[in-house]
Image (cartoon, rainbow, N blue to C red):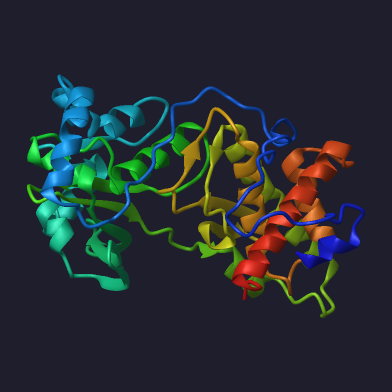
Amino acid sequence: MKGWEHSAVVPTGVSGAAGQHSPGAHADAAGVAAAVPFDASLMVGSAEVPPSDAVLSQQAAGLLTKTAGCTCQERRAMGAVRGGMGTGGTMRLEPVGPGTMWVAASYLESLAQAGLLSFEAMMSTQAGRLLRALPDRENWRLELPDGAGGVRGAFLKKHHLRDWRWWLRARFGLQPVQSPGRIEARNIARLERAGIASMQLVAYGAKLHANGLLESFLLTEELAGHVQLDHFLRQRFGPLNGDRPHEEERELRLLIDEVASLARRFHAAGFNHRDFYCCHFFIREPQRGRFEVRLIDLQRMERRRRLRGRWLVKDLAQLAYSAPRDRLSCRHRLAFIKAYLGVRKLRPRDKRLIRRVLAKQQAMERHLGLHP
């Protein structure tokens, strides 16, 4: 993205390190996307060791006051994703077990054949390939029967969280209102209703154990034939220092327009991603010059009523930071921002937005180093 520095919108300075924002960082939100009504965002709890019983007992009274009489409502909330997907969407989820797991109707037989039609089986399975293991989560690739003698790929996220809030709720027989698996499942449904291509939900589930351990999972269909954006750019298009054919350049502009269109519609619908990197845009080219773009990894996605500008700037800076420098020039990046804003000529407020995005990107580069 340093090619932007040769344009007339070079930033005058950078304030704060990566992940920090100045108090006035939301001032230009109106020049990026229109605000729309939406629900309050969800935040995932931290994975900390529970504090002592004495500390928890002191906090119990306040929490119970807030949750008194709401136990049934909270338990119903775990199935709220299912109801939400029935409005303007195509996904239909069926409950499995005692309110701990929901499965897409089209996958019931497949999961039954794989022996995964229960929350316990899903959380304990090691039948697939472990892609990543962290203290609080695991990522797996599974192969599920497709009903025709073959298999189809799926990706499983398992979450294991410990937090004093979960310990306290378990102690008093309350169920969690949120879990990482349910949050991402709901975000998939939100994007589907907004007409934004994402992942195909297979199943999700959550369970709060008596010891305060909150377990949840999300199972999604593999995006067959798709490649993450930064890899796709390097595989499909030649380097900048080469002699790129005119037709290839035209096709690159078409891809840029598709990515910008998804980003524009995503932000205009009131969302921000918080991990808006190229690796979370998945691309498929069903025929030459026609590109399909999907957005993945929605666990941290939010929908905000206020102070949206700083989060849109952060999203755009993350995308700029992760874009391959050896494939995209200053002209390509300006073409993206024009397509994103829906303008042919940059206005003063558009240039202010670009300065803020560049400042945030450069702060990320100082903090994290150049993206590979």
